[in-house]
Image (cartoon, rainbow, N blue to C red; front, side, top):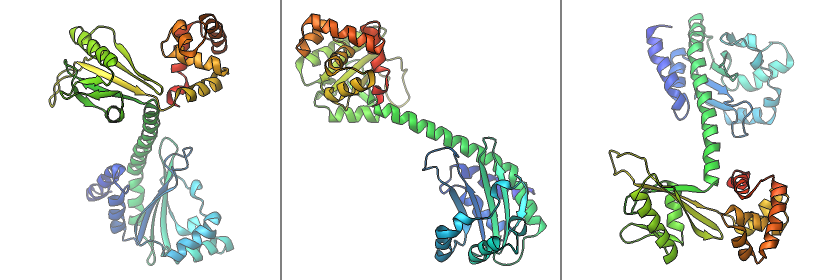
Length: 369
């Protein structure tokens, strides 16, 4: 590969990892360099992934005629005789090495699909990245065969294409992992707001801003201070802001904003230093709103820990910080009955006490249900 080839092909091959469509500039330049009618890249990014990780087909040049595409989908695709996975990685193959001329099945595929699609002559190379994903690079013409220099250029691309494919597959795996993690966090319904020393809202993430905008309990006053619609909760927020501003290392303050559906907030002192675009916050408010009603949560607790409805209701109340006496009053039970139920709950969940129960419930899959 000459220095000109490197500049012309390798740079777009690397840049094509983040291009949309993928590797479009590389394919366009390779088609011109090979004087091909058509060049393509075919691969599956994650062989054991979800259905949306389908076969990726990228190409430059003349697309197949609609009738050829239809014939392939309706019958020829299931009878494709090409030995794709048997190809030695990095070696360039000509069409007579891919199909047996004179074999009825192979001739049918060649004459009914390849030739009408303008693929009378062809070069194909398989590359395999270290994670095991294979990709096939194909160049074809309707007339005039490729020469040795064309095949040598395709072969010279192999190590660069293998590295680019490896990087792309690694990025896809990270994207998939990130998407799952992002969805888990979204389902936990946590957001954040940053506040100054007076309790004024400085910034918020998307979920925190949406929660604040939709809340019937948590609001911002005319001055921009975070407060609540009920005087009791507003006073609690103001007291927590004052205490944490005075001593940023004081224990975080948890405030229940609503009980059904559950809506709470955790105020903590901020260690974020002054930024270049906005003042440093004094506090961070983590807000959490449950999309499920208490009845839904009780049903889910019953399913998860095999609790009867009365036990599930008590377990939910205890997990939300109530004492036995408070939960008994909330649920219309005697304290003695609540203690009896709690013993059954601890036995079924394996908890050794209320602290264990809170941890078991809030670390269970219910957190992202």
